[in-house]
Image (cartoon, rainbow over all chains, first blue to last red; front, side, top):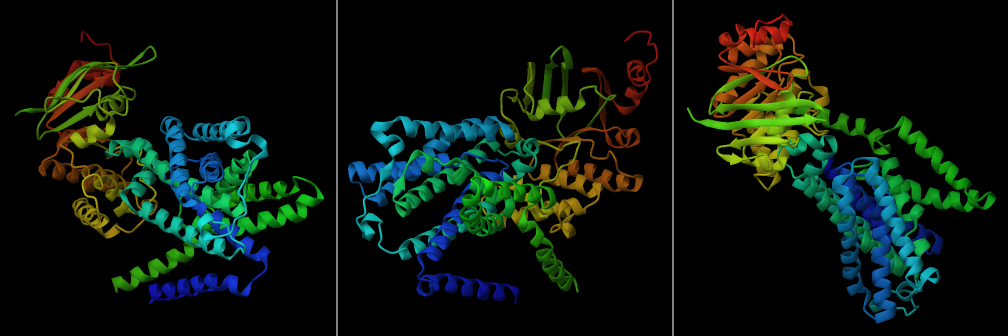
Length: 327
Length: 241
């Protein structure tokens, strides 16, 4: 009964999302939806190492690596963005290999600091390696519409691309969480020593988690660059948009869960845009004050994130079911 | 009886403090070997050295003739060393999932892992609580999760670190037979315990540690009448040790 209802609800939601571009032709609304989808994907990818308790504030590194790889290949070498997707994913994973050294050696905040440094160093490289990246001028994706160039005259194709991406990353993270890797990561998050003593190669689990996360983030970076046309170090390796924002969505929604990142991205993305538009124009930075207050409030009053507020509701259902089974 | 584990001259220093110094002993296959000693004697450090969470400074640890000392913890687990922890910290997932975690090393699919985990839960009588979160269980039940989890690694040697501490007498009476039952299923047991009655009741031999050194080894009766042991516990002036 309940699963049936759930399936019907999901089906209605999916249908609704599919027809959104038909009814809302406003570019702003389409852009907002697309952005939410991108952030759902980004946060869900960021969340994979968080299954293992690893808190990264450097995912802009993978995002930028993916984006720059595809953009350079396309603009400078004329290589198709579809090949660029693979290349971007691969290069982002190479970045993941580098970050895995501190990942398996450093605990808690020390890994987080290393991840920040990693992303910032890459940003500086992108600024200074002018022959490759055009430095601070950045790279522009030429406007040559067509599926072959992944460039479009309307926002509709990217709405669907981003939606597919979000769904794919959610499904992937769900699959990872319920696979042996997911159990091993969650065990390592709860008690690293106990996990080791139970025969888990925790270093390997953390490494694999970061590989998934970095590769997916790189792929998202590639698609985002083609959605956005412009790529420069400050935006590609943007600390607050691609390192802090996914982490914040994760904390506010519920880190280490499946739906936490989704809820976080759905709430924070429109709110962020709204705040930046209204408060940011009154006084620059005022929007971040509201962000900060929200973060403090959530961490203080709902440490498990918004998803934990919904937990009693799920539990009620479950215990109701089991007592029925007992009778 | 052959020896399952042979420890020789095992030493671990923390700075200037010898937490474990030159400890040598063997664990015979199929026995229940007790390990006692005052607080700070180095018992848990010894467990950490055997299970690999700490690297030893000197000495050898051989399981069935194979050297463990340089191997990482997960490899030692695969070779047959299982352990529980003094402070129970179950993973934040259901009881069944807790036991499934180590089983994934042997079975690749969730379904197989689930079936195997359920068998182990039946053995420790937690099968009815399989879907509960550990935080809703009593301490005695959570200690049984620890044992179940360790058993799920299919150990040859199981190191139990105070699985009875903090339990009330009726809970002790409930958990105590479990240790014997595990041994009877073919697992050799080395266990740390402060509850003397329980220790004396089920162990065939007892090791006594004090200040990092092994000071006595023998049957429970021999050990309790040993002058060095009495000194270590009561602090009397001993004639000579």
